[in-house]
Image (cartoon, rainbow, N blue to C red; front, side):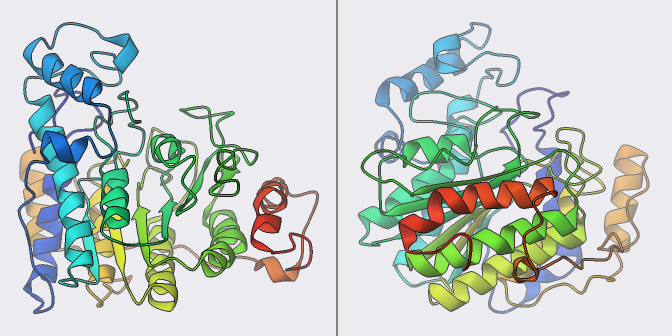
Length: 381
């Protein structure tokens, strides 16, 4: 909760508080197969697994001099302002995902969720887009260092997972897949189909850049036309996923038109991929998501319940205790149900390719770039 840029910043910790209160209100933490762990602050040496030590020092300095701007390191900017506890707070988020990797390696858990994590814009030496330390990358690196041979990273945030992609750009052991709104209309302006990895790892980066206005039907069609095939071909031992829910139609920081229903279905799909290809090994993080009452708590409560093996039914009523807290603290009415009541039907890729459809052209652009690398034919698979 100390990861707090300012009272008015979109990445406000109240979204985490409301999510945890909803998880508790739904009784998810009472299930016998779920354990709650307090995240530890990652050490300098641990952070240095994926970040430059000079950058870590710059973050520490920013916490001591929060009014100074360091454009080179992305600190003190409008998007990522500095604050007094910036290093420790950021290192705690990173430490949570590091502990997730260690739990999976030690076989203490099959599924771990750190919904406060998902800081996917942070690169090796620079903060960006509200992100200081890249906890998902840290979890992946810890898995690799612990003997894992192949990891798939799936990022379904509305914004391109550019930082994680850049960290593993030349590592053939990591397949990064990002499904996001096109950089033509949204920050960070990257993540196009022709970004496919470095010379040492061609095909290790996969990007599906969707047009503004994409709804559940197109989003899920794009996911199922690209992701399951590549995961099966890559044969990962662990899946690490980033579940930014800012693609929701009521989130002001993107132009996608998704629903909680669609985001829940996508979490189920990723869980199924982990079960089919990784023996269930799955680490899930949060990410973006800035509608703190209508969207974030429901989306991430569904995620935690799915990881726990007992999904919350779509038409479940939102806990009355949670609604009362929201009314008292924010003077607002929360959603009545755990879903948005939308029709989740989507057209399977097997039905055929429509060259007049922008989403289909986006899918085909990605398949043409990366499917041949894995021995998959983009036209006839």
